[in-house]
Image 1 (spheres, helix red, strand yellow):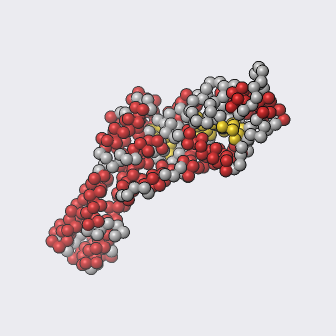
Image 2 (cartoon, rainbow, N blue to C red):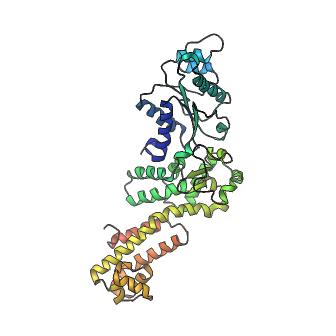
Image 3 (cartoon, rainbow, N blue to C red):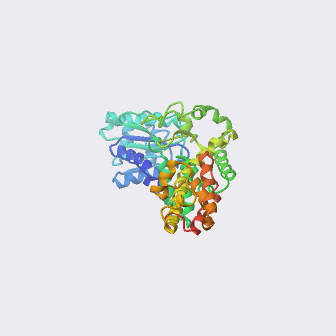
Length: 410
């Protein structure tokens, strides 16, 4: 499976963070739940290694200068050490990265300490370049304690790299290991539209999007339960449910303050493709949102199945043209409307499903295509009315099309 750092949107944020640290600007990166803090930490420190930046990894957030000194192996001193004393003992280190284990919580004492540390860098205290700090936080509690963002320290929000494209790329790479290409395509299209930008949720539903909708809803509900989400949490998300707020309502450098806690908890997400949306797992808590949730399942399916059905239709037209010549749409059962007559007269592959159905059902030697055309019409009609199709129906359509040599690319 491809790593987080190879995804286009994620790589953009990770590179920005690493480049800032190279310039000795401290960075605190805020990620939502659903994105692994440890994976993000590993990707940033790997980029520092590639850039030949010397970093010291700490196991926990510091609560005092003594914690920083002990974490980087500084000698113990009597009393409370100054920043100058601490910096003198970590001379040669470019970045202090904490916490090493990717812990999310940010202690109340840490933000003022980080502000002082960045301020020392600004004043040139101790006539040394103070190492930059780097850390990853997530969750509503952590973002209520963020340090200042200024010329020497930045708070970077992960939303700048969130996109459905990243999840789709990850699904494509993961699908390469599957033996069934159609299953891989199905998951590649449906998983991102249901999970959105939540990478953890995408992993959870990976093996369930071919199952009946009740099974998928159960997986989503289980995820919400594990994250501690309850139905009352949706009340504060009502603005998200009442309509769009623009394709990407968050500013480039921060998340809207009214939605920042919900975003940090993973309850809402924002992508260039769909704008601001409530997490599907959160929606699964409320039975009243079931139709809206199934719409996401539908939109992933229709991106795959609509062109696929049309490709099968055109393939059937091609087979009939090869057998009966280019005038078959007019010779057997002419279309009812002049426009359709003109279209098929110029190109037999313009014969649409309604007309095609009339022909194959009335011409005995063409009836071997009758079941296939019926399946295409049924699937198309479900999608046209915004209803998700079942994977079993789509798989059966594929089987019949393959048997008749009507699968696109055969």
